[in-house]
Structures are given as structure tokens and as C-alpha cells.
Amino acid sequence: MTDRIAERARGRRAREATGAEELRFGDLRRRDAEEANHLVIATVRIGIPANLWLGRFTRRHPSLSVEIMNRSGVTPELSVSDYWISGGPPGGWTREIAAFPDVRSVDSLAELAGGCIYRVTFENPPIVYLYRKLGVPLQFPQRARAGQMFWEVAARDNDFRRILAYARSVDRSAAILSIRRRPLRSHLPELTDAQHALLTTAMAEGYFAVPRAITLTGLASKLGRSKSSISESLALIEKKILESAMRAPAALA
Image (cartoon, rainbow, N blue to C red; front, side, top):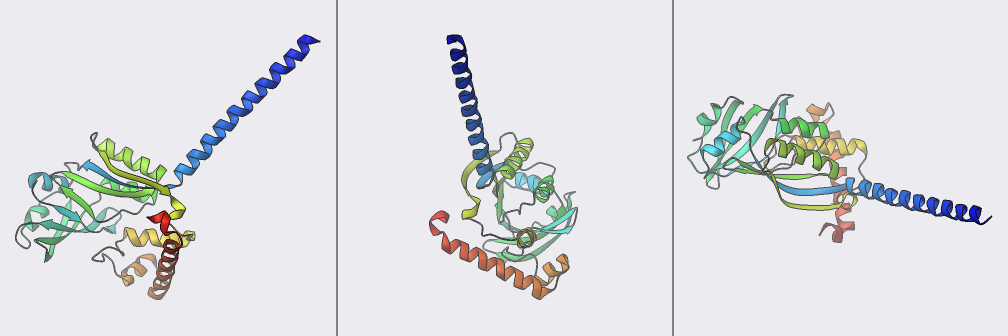
């Protein structure tokens, strides 16, 4: 009888221990799920691959500052971006940039604040395909100098980890210069799937860039919708974002 009582007690303790272990694993799973739904805002420093025109150009001219202002897709394989490049006469870098093998065309647009804005059409680097696969909008402006990119990233935690893994596969010395993690809900309003898709596309195409890389008409044409429909949808998205920010000022501080 005593042996049976002792055996039952041991069984009860084992079940309690197993239950406690399952609870701990459950807590970890919930914690991982919560962190995966956090928004990561980070600045990453990465060496630009030497086979990209921007990497070769900025290494060749280490004293120049380059700011990438926007990006739009021309074809699935080509992009166009506006670059502000410090120093040099207006259009002074056009011929040199045009000579790089991944550059298709270059236009000098305007002088601005001791530099010049160039519009460059180029072959997509791998990062564009990664962002496209993840459905994450590229953030602008980006800064480059002396062969290094100072890369602003805003993405869900899981997507950020994949972007960082890519950065370190390109450059082992890639480093996170700053990072913040915040609950996604404190940053984004409750957008429908269609609204989220429209906002992502508009950002990726440079609709919110300064200067704007695509017009409302161009965005509507790309999406196969009317200009008035896109305008109304964007206005509603902006209203939701503004209302969300006003409801939670402490969370955004």
C-alpha cells in the first residue's frame, strides 16, 4: 500500500513538472509570436558590393556624399532612382556613371545645395528582389559614402532578420548602428489587406518620396485603377494613419 501511494505521488509530481515545462514552452512561443509582430526600426551600415555602380563610384570618390532619394520599377529587372551627389559641376558625373555596366541611362536633373540630382536607370541589385519577396517597402532617403551604405530599415522582426542575414552575406562586417523595437499596433492603424497593399505599392514606387518619383496618374495606371479611386483610397489611408497617431502619442514618442 505504501509503495502504491509513493508511486502515485511520484507520478503526480512528474505530471506537474511536465505541465510546468509545457507552460514555459507555451510562454516562449507566445513571446516569440509577440516579438515577430513587432516593428523593427534600424540603421544598418553595409559595404556596397563592388559589382554595383554605386559601390564602385563611391569608392572611387570617397569624399563625395550620395543620397538615394527614391526608387521606381521600370521593368521587373530595372529600376530608376534619383540621387543627390555632393560636389562637382552640374552634370559633371553623368558620363562616368553611364559607363558602369549595370547602368542603362543617366540624366542630370538640377543643381541643389552644393550638388546635383541625377536620375539613374539601373539593373536591380539583389536587395530589390528580397524586399519585393517580403512585401516590405524600401525606406528613403538612403545615404552612401566611400563604398558604404547607411541603410534605413523598417520591417517586422522576422523580415528584419532575413534582411540582416542578407546584409551579412554581402558584407561580414555589416553592423547595426541603431535599433528600436515597438509593437506594430502602436505604429500602424487597422488597414484592410487592400489598403495595406496599396500603401506598400505607393511607397515602393516613390509616391511619397520628395521629390515624388511617380504621379497619381502614373500610380493609377500601374495598378489598373482610376485616378479618382486611387486618390480616395490614399486619402482614407492617410486619415487612418493620422487618427492612429493622434490616439497613441505616448506610444510613438
